[in-house]
Length: 110
Image (cartoon, rainbow, N blue to C red):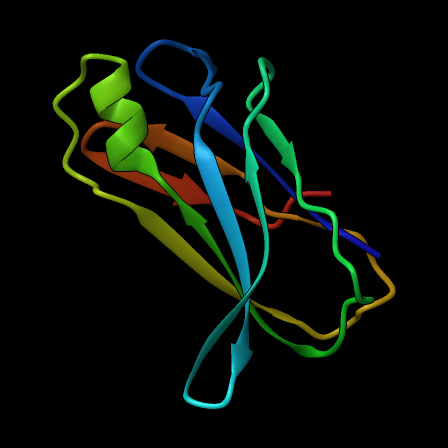
């Protein structure tokens, strides 16, 4: 299946368009990059995979520092990384990010 995400700017109450996102999978002692993308006007990013998902630990890295600077905002987070386990590789995985300059939250979406 696939991994998708979206980013919502809680301060402005709008999607966070134009944010860089990197998807990686745990590989040995490090991480292997699988896909890169940028959030669209709705704050969503689909990260197409060449290989099917497998049972493993994955990580989304959001380039929040670059995005804050581009928006003229003094943010605290240079990037946000969310690591999560895929235990059912045949299911779709949606991992949203709710963001403000000094805090963030996430959850397992549908």
